[in-house]
Image (cartoon, rainbow over all chains, first blue to last red; front, side, top):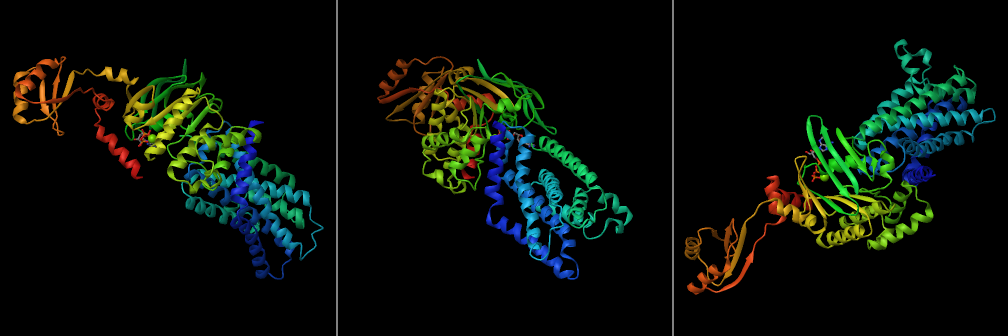
Length: 243
Length: 322
Ligand SMILES: Nc1ncnc2c1ncn2[C@@H]1O[C@H](COP(=O)(O)OP(=O)(O)OP(=O)(O)O)[C@@H](O)[C@H]1O
Ligand SMILES: [Mg+2]
């Protein structure tokens, strides 16, 4: 019960103080929107539906990774983060509370392109249940990657730089723009180590039935990624922030 | 009964030993002070006790709980004021207190009245609606202390509670600390202000270069250095010649003139006043005052640690200038 109160209030505070702040909300809307428009202009002949999986995945990735990395590095530099480490709640509860806000924000980001696309095309063929689950898992894994970046960064600008350092290669390797089968052979194994690869594959399946792997396998792998990343984050926080 | 028990505690950062095998106990309901210059290892020690840093060696118990094994259980009864005021800048005073309360699992019905009460006690009721970033340094310090008290901790850790704060706010903070002790909170504070330690601490540990040099009440610490008898005379007329004559007549004492034109006699044995007074009377010199000079806690500190008290003063100035 006590942990729950702490969890809920950390989440509520982050949402109110970070994610619901006007610049972040508008970022959350404008960014996915401009990606969508850019893609539409770049390849006018393409079906919007075919672009949707990529847009969703990108919006989640960009809404979560740097957001968490930056807010946590910010709280650490102001030292208020110590309060969370000193509170009588387990490290797991604290990590879950911190990523929960980002996950919600990432999912909100994901539905901007969906909403936008719904004005142009018929989305009745989409498997919503699968899509939402996939978005959730992409949000969880990218938030945890953001946390991992925060553990390595000392300053806010570092957190920002590290996030981009990871995000852009990931976008190119996950099969969104270039099918994995057309990537140079030595890069392919890296693709299969990225959670985003499996996330986008499920999204493809849910929206245009163009998945290359079994969704069940992808879900299982994403869950495994989440669990592993969570444990690594917890271990690193324990090791690096409790000196 | 001990509230905090630290045994053979050690902290190394790489090859550097910041805390070197220290042991001490803090009794229930006392104010225990760590007095030492910058870099003595005060913060390192506190951080290990509160579970923010891992000891290289040693044991710590707080109210009988082994901090290294049951960190979270121990943290639930601790109130912690870090050496910097570290609340959330973008939240107002009231929300900051309520958030801290929530971290300790307090329900809304409990935390809101408690936050209001603390704001009132710290004279911050009006400031409660302003964001923390708009607070003055003294107000920030007070709110940080209030936040540490929100869950009614049994033991409170204060790392330099009054450094860089003006006289008035410092006094207010010190009074709050003494009141808390009266209400049954055990307090551990660090400071590099000798007067602060002397004024409010029941017991003091001198810490220098990671080691505890002495521990005790102020009178105990005073006793710990042998001192003779020093008398200071204020007279209507004084000069080197008179001083030389006094020295000639009272060979047991060391006679000197201080910059405030008073004559000081120091001796390993007690100085008998009547002969000195008669000497002055015979010379036609009027004596207005004869006062015994006792060593100050500062003298004891200097003697025991070998650190000039000016080192402490420097650190005071530095911190005020920050
Ligand atoms: N994380 C760290 N890594 C390396 N050295 C450290 C670390 N933290 C502290 N030290 C060193 O340990 C020594 C003790 O530091 P500590 O902060 O405990 O001193 P302090 O008594 O609190 O001083 P101050 O009055 O300046 O706060 C210092 O020499 C400091 O440089
Ligand atoms: Mg310190």
